[in-house]
Image (cartoon, rainbow, N blue to C red; front, side, top):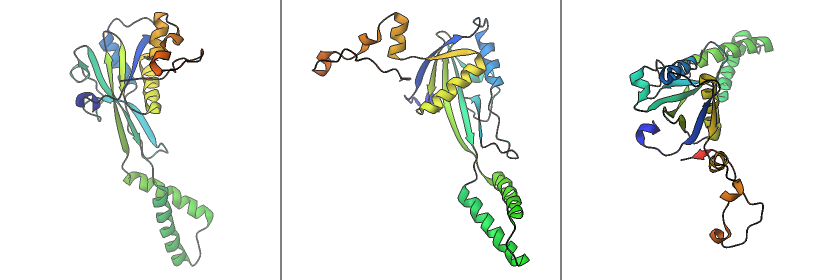
Length: 216
């Protein structure tokens, strides 16, 4: 878990409540995380992916008790993503093996309908045996400043967690970047661009700072 190891790859955000600010922040946060808690993939279904919030130190738990969620002025939790896929090569090998046995026993190759039925049965069997691939990404929430840090390097994953937070807690998650900070302070983006003295040459009048996720 990056938070406890001291890892430094994260994106920073500030949050704004969509409605009135909650009177009991801890209760509100606990309820929201539970409403979007991680649920394992149902192996009997066609689902190949599951995602949701879990406790920081136990990716199998989503009770979010006070002692496991709050640390001083911070709420520490995680976002778990599971994927479960049957490799195409494994499916093909098993289906070919069955087709050969069928042809030997019945003196004919299996019909398309028979093969499709066996493919569906094999998929369910192999899903029961497959081990899900799990990723757990840490999230820290400052209860005083309402700032959030998402400890993930992938932009796609950071965006997914941001959307999940917005859905669970009815907040707006806004990236903290030089451009966004300048906008809040009433500073023109162009004022943040590199100076001619810095790069040793004249700059075009249109030079500006590119907005992106704030990285620590």
